[in-house]
Amino acid sequence: MSAPLAVFFGAGKVACGLLGYLCFQSGYRNLFVARRPEVIGAIERHRGYTVNMLGAKSSRIEVRNSRALSIRDDEAVIEAVAAADVVFTSVGIDNLHAIAPHIAAGLWRRARRGGRRDLNVVACENLPGAGAYLRHQIVGAAASDASILVDHVGGFSAALTRQIMTGGEVRDGSIGFNVQGRSPLVVDKAGLRPPLPTLQGALFSDAFPSVVMRKLFTLNCAHAVAAYLGYREGCRFVHEAAVHPRVVPILTGALAEAEAALQAEFPAAAAEIAAEVVEALVQIRDPRLADPIARVARGPRRKLAPRERLVGPARLATRHGLAHENLCRAIAATLAYDAVEDAEAVSMQRAIADHGVTQVITEDCGLLPHEPLAQEIKHQWHQLTAQTNGLAVFSAAPTPSLERIRGNVARDLSRRFNADLVHAAVERAAGRFEEARVWSYVEILMKRAALHELASHAN
Image 1 (cartoon, rainbow, N blue to C red):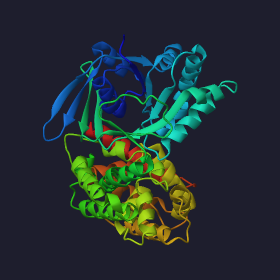
Image 2: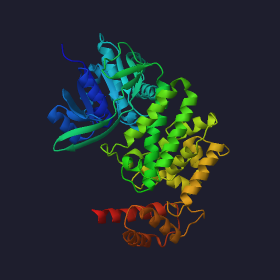
Image 3: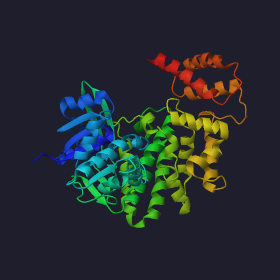
């Protein structure tokens, strides 16, 4: 009898570093559905990859019995789903719609064949309600005459872990991942169909929403606070930001506020929550992870959502009448995040420049202008962006002068590059906009041009 088959949509840090490792340890054959040819080739070449488990006692594990195929190979992907014993997704919540048709078609084929048990599909995506969203995407992607049967045969759930995974680059034809922490994979029992997958190192929870909240408001919160404040200090990696003297007080303060809010919400778990906060700080400070701030900070608008890692604990603290000043500072730093290579950050800065920060706080954070929390965040944002040693990205004037914009860009880039080089690069970039008549995007475009020149000089 052949080993059971686990199919993974995604071949990144979570799919390989956690899910594939657990399934391999549990006796499954692994099949990764991926987009990047070099990743597919590396897994196929070695029939697997390596996982470095970091901690007081590090270990190196060779994950084998693994294959990979391209998402573009529609027939092979659909057949893999139809034949699978469990399916996991780890592609990012915004990409679920792209893989949903393959999973729907596989479930349909499985159902038409008959004689096979139901198939559980588990979303390992950082989103409250990920299991319900997964079901919505897959059933909605099925043909109109197939959706009822697809919904009948499929179990749809979600999972998460407190481990941090990095790596995934192909080097010398092979691929490896670093994993910090020994926390289990927690799977939501709701939505699963029997029999439950047999997975060593997995816990099946009846209280999954509270598990999600605690993880988002501790580990993900710590990650985000360090990333957005570290970006302002010119840090490249999260572990650098987590020990930076100007970041640490706000980081520890924000986590203390989140901890108090969670303990007020879940008093019976107060000791566990305190331990989770301590663990979060240990994890993000581990230099062996070398987690880039650009990766962790990516997509700031999603991370400002009402139930997400920053606004969520601030709202919870407000509801319990607890302090949340440092969380507001972190939210303000997120609103000021302006990395030109991040499309979502650029769109956020355009929205702030065109419509004001109040509208973005309302639309992205779900906070009405009259709410005290919204007013506190706006106050912190104004203080942050007005600092002479920080970013002065936003002008109070409705039509800022080229000189003001040039000064804003120069102050920002001087945090990360030599001041003389910055001055020369900004002067050259500014020359392109001397005849500008519409100012909404000039600052973003000028910064992008200067940054491109500085990056080329550094290389």
